[in-house]
Length: 478
Image (cartoon, rainbow, N blue to C red; front, side, top):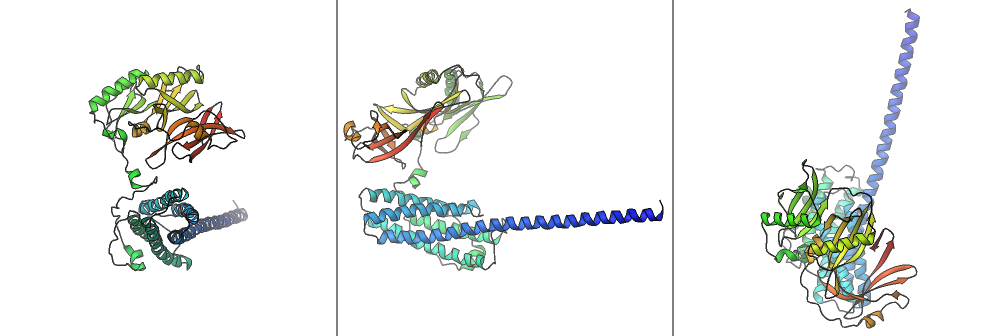
């Protein structure tokens, strides 16, 4: 290769390398700009949620104080509804921030309880009942605690506004994550204690810098806060109804499991219990296997009373041979064979050669929606594929049923006159906080839609209304 050719080759290589380097630099700049834009968009979203949290806490403080000052029932209903909504907005904003979820549990619980407590009082005020002085004082205490929390977070907001810290740069040991989480954790504990009506702890006020610099407050055990609401402490600590029954041994549970398998035609070999699951409904957990050792199903038996609470078969059903009515009849016979007695189908769904039915227990002709279980059957032969009865055994107990104060005709008179209602049924409607309300339930059509309307059998109030959606593939409610 002569010198001229070599020179041309070197020039070509240098030009190619220069272009490649230029392309790499341009690509890197483009990626950097994309990264910066994505970071800024995420930071803006964090900032928006941060602002929403601060605004929500400030508004909750004002509303809680206003309820205490208001003297009109109508005004209180509106203010309490605003509190319920603002609690939800604040919780949504809080959960969207890049904070350690384990360190804001108390605050999230507080916001849940505050919104639910406001909803409980709103129902009380809407029904014409007065709010007690103690309940007014509790709401005013919320206002003070929310103001204290908001003040500390406003100090942090000032640092953010001046660019001293930003959300995107938070790491597991980042300053903002640790600081904000500790503030929320400490105040969530205090607010929860205020909800519980417990006494305040005398503690020296911590300066903001000290608080954000490394205060490690541990969550204190909060006194129980009980009220008529779904997030009340007594609802969280509710035990299963069957917990009062005799506790059985693992050997007894295995015998009950074997009897269940024979009753449902399960041919898999029952394996020894894998231990007791924790929770409000302790269970012995079994697995089923074939001759090759492959798992074919699972079965759970309650520790108290020895009841079948859950069953799942791993087999895939063949092509459907039965109609929905035939499979439903097989389900009713199976329930009787398992000792559940006469139950009534509430809703159903057909999918992939399977039929799933929700059944309700009944007592003296009264439906019990709290005692609900699910069955899934194969449309090939009507055999059982799955059973979910945890909810049933959580709530199954002997109830003392009272005579309705209103007759069916009197309850029907409370319906919308334009609703074409079928004959009514009595049911015990769960009220969401551990109690039940005796109601007349009417299914009726209005403007091409079907509804289930529940009228209180004592005072005639409309307790619940649900839309019924029915098609060739199922019936469900909204």
